[in-house]
Length: 259
Image 1: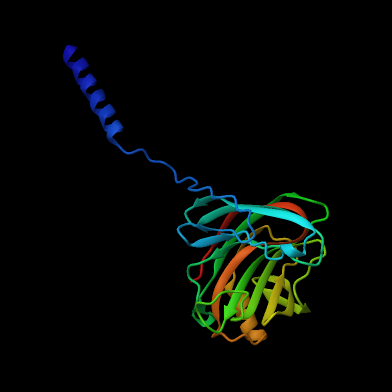
Image 2: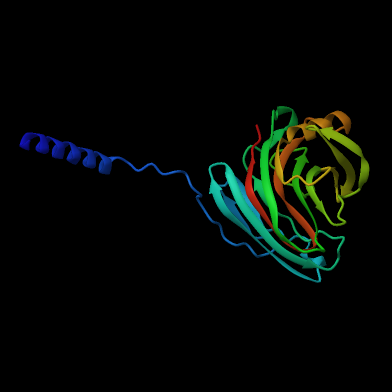
């Protein structure tokens, strides 16, 4: 009996020692909560520079009053969680801002060299005023030259994909028809802003859980609207354009890549 008790004691001692020496396996949890951005053109690098969060109150001068703040709330592998809160009054036909995540990796490729642009975007309005006028959209910029940026004199085309259209807002220009892309029928709008041409695809209904490939939107425009496949994709953003009203738009999950 004494020998058995000592043997059991030794086995338990070894087991406890091994357990203490083994590394604890932790699940991969949320990595980072970012700075709350409030300044007009405040930005923050996200996920080691893979994205830039932009507060971007570019149209605030048209407002009679208003403010906006934006924050990345978590980064988990390739998945980004972020939100923006704003309130704007005055000039109801003017966009006040475009809080967005701006992709900085995989860009500066010609459309002909891109095989796919997979993206997921799960978002929700956690609050929204009854007078809210705003869109939730991707903003994709083309140029004749790599290494340039959107909304500049080097921009040739701006491609928007509207997932939400609250209130009376519409894209730039006028509707020129419809387009069948990824199994949905989108309104197709065309317009001119400064020196570039805009094409906007407006969803038939609000898409708050979006999981698609963005490349077919470009394929449609190359085949049907004359955009050259030699154009470079120089900027890829996703965010919201408020006109008037108050809201908090929360992105629960976001990913984007260019292959």
